[in-house]
Amino acid sequence: MVVLYATNADEQHSYIQSAKDKGYEVLLLDSPITPHVIQKLETSKENISFARVDADHINNLIKKTSQSFQNSMKRKKSL
Image 1: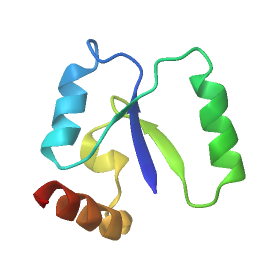
Image 2: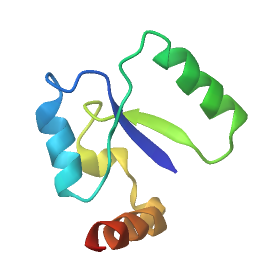
Image 3: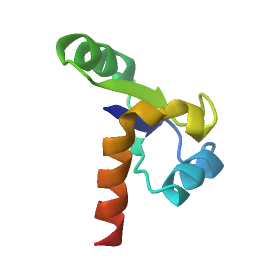
């Protein structure tokens, strides 16, 4: 699972909106300890990774191999 996150809602607004338009949710992680928490979760949990929403184009952040995740997000959005 890929978790999309932003560190500044104002500066990353267009990236957040692009992700939302594609049916994804974006976490706002704006604490100084965020990098440490992310590192801890990525190393202690299997199949989880974090991607900053402005790190790349949204299509490259969420690879096609996570199709089941995309389908579940689309179903959730339609509810």
